[in-house]
Image (cartoon, rainbow, N blue to C red; front, side, top):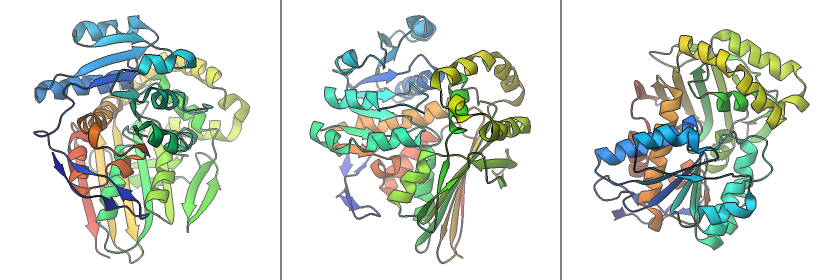
Length: 404
């Protein structure tokens, strides 16, 4: 492994970085626990880790954590090296003891919305185990960030929001910002996923819960509150996806990139297909009482109830997923990155596993604390290395720039 000296991020903080190559670093010998490993996202992460391990001839020590061993049985039968450990993340008294002994815990047990505390990170800090999550919730991310000093004292590194969006989208923003010719003025995130992308009830619950959250955007350096599912616009996601209708949602990458890059203007929009889903989402945000939409148990129950219908729609529309990240400088230079994949449930696992592989390969070199993706992966060579694995299987991956 080649080390580079600490560099200074946009906020003037020293950031320890490493340059990683497949030949010099791997997760060999590291014990990985994937919480939520019985769900679609968790199992997708596990599949990608095992695939890459086989490709690069690295033995992956992988344990699936979940409440229902039956849901993991077919996966374990297909992958005999994978272990199962019964976990209930709501059992705070036993959680830290259950996590202890692993090198990295990957928290994929969503949804993350409307939680009182980041209990898995708290347990990881108590057990002194490195941590990664696929959080897609603003409040959960902020609560996790507040534990930075405790993580430093425990000597662990925690990386937040390491899915596809947020996660890869944050790294796309890093790449776009690096291509600008002068001072950053604006970052715009745009996302599209057909149906639920094959991700099932979890993404349904997430969508419903987000309909109850006011949206924070940054405009001229100030946080501005907007209504959820407002600000409709049409965005060109590039070949294979085309123009899609998107609207504002309250997403973590808006906050993290505004902070880390000191971007005066940041917003994020999301849209789905068929278009009737967009109309129904906006109607829920406008007319259903927030007292109902913020009830996690009620939302989960409703999502599971309508899941068979949604699966039928998914069979028709597929899991097409697109991301577009635009950066603009004060002088008018622009950079845009495009990403397209045919299956959300697959690409979120590929993305999460790319972060897992990097973290497990470099645990001894990681700076302790709690970090956004753009903080932990800030060096250009490292950024390119992680992105090259995170976008595996995409049918669209390109960037454009204009000097202004």
